[in-house]
View: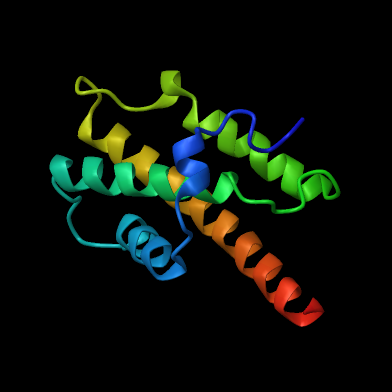
Length: 123
């Protein structure tokens, strides 16, 4: 099962900018006294989904590492359109989904960062 089979060619062409990924994840996972407004939740979720798709299009060792395979299974589950909040979803439901995508995106970014460091060490 190839990692790019379910990823759009557009996501595969996007560069990975870890600073942008970190900013989106930090926004999603920030603890505040009040829940963000729905437009901010939706915008942050869109950013995170884009980052997650781009990270999933990278070669992260899917064929060799069972932990990475499990991470991809989780990624496919979370990105399933039937799980995503709709306009009719509650603000809290959309918030919870945003945080779930944020946590998963952070895990993918960590794997990506480790792969880049290994590539740099091998070079």
